[in-house]
Image (tube, rainbow, N blue to C red; front, side):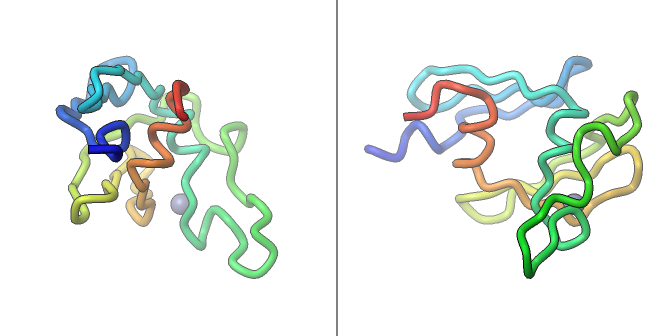
Length: 102
Ligand SMILES: [Zn+2]
């Protein structure tokens, strides 16, 4: 049960962002653009140097999460309105981005 904080109980796309209620009762609201700017895929982060190529400033201010798809028990894939769909967000990362980690 120690991993409850990294398991979502519910996950909803809202006008303000991705709203997650974690199994330990904590809620996170992750703004659309903020999520897009923290994508960790090979297009957004250089695989060799780990340098970020696409950050929050580089994406449209009106970008939104269009769809989310569970990828096993540990991550979710997000499709954005700028048609970026290669981003895989481990729940642990989402929890950290949403604050209240640890
Ligand atoms: Zn990406």
